[in-house]
Amino acid sequence: MFQTRVAVADDDGSIHHFGFSFVEAQRIISGELDPNILVDVIGRVYNMSQVHQSSPNESNNKRVTVDIKDVAKTKMGITLWGSYADQIVNFVSKGSQGPVVIVCQFCKTKEYAGTRSLSYSMYATRILINSEVEEITQFHEGLLREDRNTSFNPVVGRALLTTSPIEAAFSGWALSPVDLLQNSGNGDVICVIAQVLQVNKEKGWY
Image (tube, rainbow, N blue to C red; front, side, top):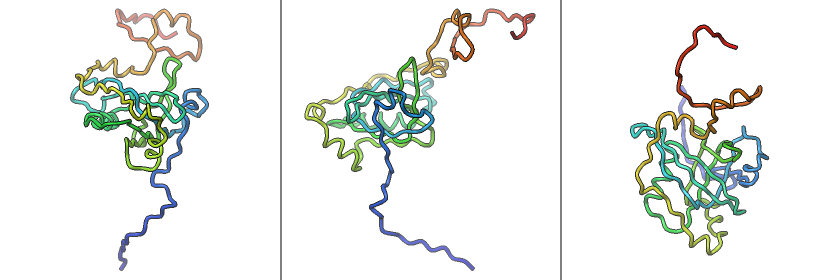
């Protein structure tokens, strides 16, 4: 009764393929932006951490942090997990020459020890590395000569750094001593890792 018909249409150049909405790193670091809104950033990678993984058999627990400089030379860290970490690791493993420009779209802001940085958002974040898109090409063209000739030293060639499940679970959290609980106030968020010596069954909640 009904038939489906599919036809190839001409690409409309007025519609951006990715729809980037880049923000300056300084606005993220200063806390000016709403942390509940995902952001897009672009910058040159100047440093990359060692790869951390809590279990060699669980690639989703793999994480790596890249440090970038945006167009204003503001530095900021971006923590990537799972397949996103694999994407940057595989790229630098190929020994690419020249500056590495990365676009991270739909990232979320996180704060640790008073410092704000970016992390991936599951199923939303998109990463482009030295891709042939206009924004990355323009960023490359705007680099100063010293930036074009300065490469970063990735630590991909080193052995994988294995972290314990506890370290992986509390990654990004500032740990506090138990004594701090006695002086904490209402609304304080305190993260403590301790060994249970004994359970007092006679004492209820208080």
